Image 1 (cartoon, rainbow, N blue to C red):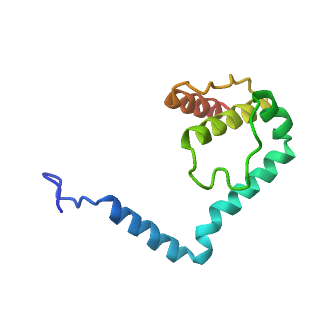
Image 2: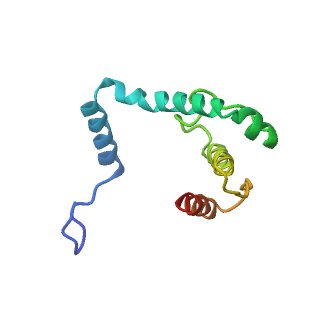
Length: 120
């Protein structure tokens, strides 16, 4: 279906999903599991940095499961955990960073995180 005035082709969500499936097929059968491997690597690195003692206990949070960020189970909770870990890592790297609150504006949080990371 052509768009009005642009002459381009407008595509729907189904076409995008087909492209993602084709890309996964092109990368090989293990590509679908790559995100799980990355999450396990991330968790190992966080454990080496003592994230459970330093970050989670301070905020009264549970430890991450091996696949916490690999599967979209509760996006709001996962986003807050990501922001908590990002703030902790930035502070651990020697840049004071205020811990985001659960009900802060997500766009403002991400903007602040990116701004701080650019200053490294």
